[in-house]
Image (cartoon, rainbow, N blue to C red):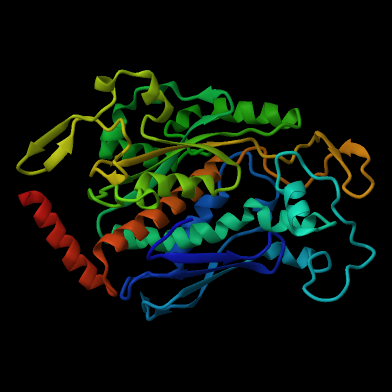
Length: 398
């Protein structure tokens, strides 16, 4: 993922000792506590349809560096999330020594997972060496990084949220009218309501309908995907640029979303729906008022124009495929014997769309924080705030 000011790496396996993230580029003097990150980690672990792993792990972060007396130093921030399940996997995931005979290699790749492609690429005959890192467990580290970026953006009035709009073939008809794309208060209301839903849908009273669908899928040994929307409000115009392909903010956002495990589709604003309409029904008409400056009467383009933010809410719709581990596995081939048989099984969720929406928030926060710092620069928070306020005055007087 192309980032210009913010840099981050994650490391760790699903059943290893833990997950590590190193985040660089956050300016000095940002107030930051472990609880700021832990509350986001808890949100990622929620959602109806999750598997047994979530009953074991109670994710919490340890800040190892980059923060002193509750404020960032401007130096790299190191974060560590311990895997509680490591105690049960010490033998299978040992760092040193030879693999004991009691460890059975994973040799039946699952269709839809990284197992076979990764095994071929890295010459691994035990596919656990692939599935451990490719697992969506890695997203806990991304959520931790995103939590720091969220905290930074909030200093400038930029808020990020998400909610689920469909699971499987069951959609929320109440969200068919996309006029809410232009309404910051409505987006925030949907987000707040989704926080009270087990499915993270903005209509918690419909939870039971969706839970019934998930229960039916579980009984059949199936899994389900779905669609979620992630948004940012309070975003100023001018983040990103039209001048080169890799600086376009919508491209950067799309890449970030597609990097999340199991994501197969991304739309900005109306997305594919825009291709079916007349131009007059798509493009967001421009207005101006003394208190607001320039604004748009609609937000069909999802807060971006020409590779830059327009000043309207950034709205992204993201499609997640069903989880590949199935109770009733699909056909596969043993990589060693070449015998055709059923794919291997791992402990898994029935649906993880609610959790993926929280990961989507993290990735949007990372991209927007990077683009924000790219535009305004600065090494400490107070310096950046001065530059931001100067830009706001410029926009009002343009």
